[in-house]
Image 1 (cartoon, helix red, strand yellow):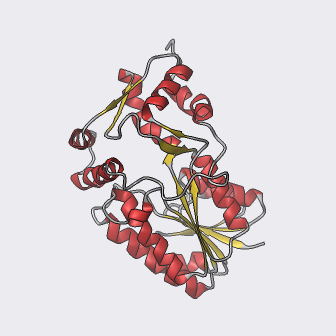
Image 2 (cartoon, one colour):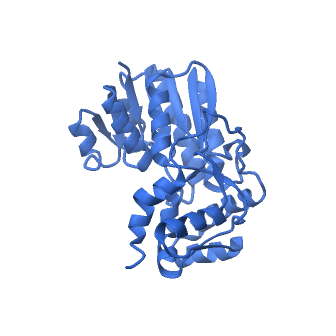
Image 3 (spheres, rainbow, N blue to C red):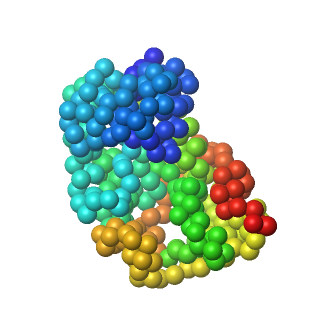
Length: 297
């Protein structure tokens, strides 16, 4: 059985992928800035290395004896130098992985990554992909669509106003995917790595518009919910009002503009392989609407 490294074991995707790998009997190394947060994985037999993706010594320790790596770029929002930091960390990690003898890498990317810079946080991902493709012989890139879990960002306004807001047009169809399905795809690719260079889209069961999402939330919750399109600058002011720093609001607005311009549309066609299992309505029933509360509350 191979030894697999995961660099972000505490997020939705990284943690679920780690659990699936341990279920399958894989030997697992996880890199975590907090040993305590990874304690449950350690209790199941994972080796926890304390450190960050920009610490070469920690990467070397995590990579020692491994043959396969799952690389997830941390989310944007916390650093004004996010682009250069993320790409620099990926390039360093790719070189260290090659030096350690790692032959297989699965990279979590995103729809729209093909565009490169100018698409906010997604704009880092093409260079991250390329860093690993240049250094490692077998690289599979996963490019999922919009995460169903991102709806939790809108939970306060849905609860308080029955509305959620975005610069994305309400009639624009986008692929929407559950993070659990992304984790299942990642675990599958890590356990049986493909040979050579590959890109795999992950598109959920169907493309949906935000108007359709609002209708589904209304149906499951039992209360009317409306989607409202707003301008990019309006979105920026709202983010600043919620306490985001200027640089973070700017990077997300750049992403919204990329969506409006079509630069974030998937490059990968929907196929049976890219179509994942969990319908949005199932996610709403099991996870999102219980967080909203009952219609009679």
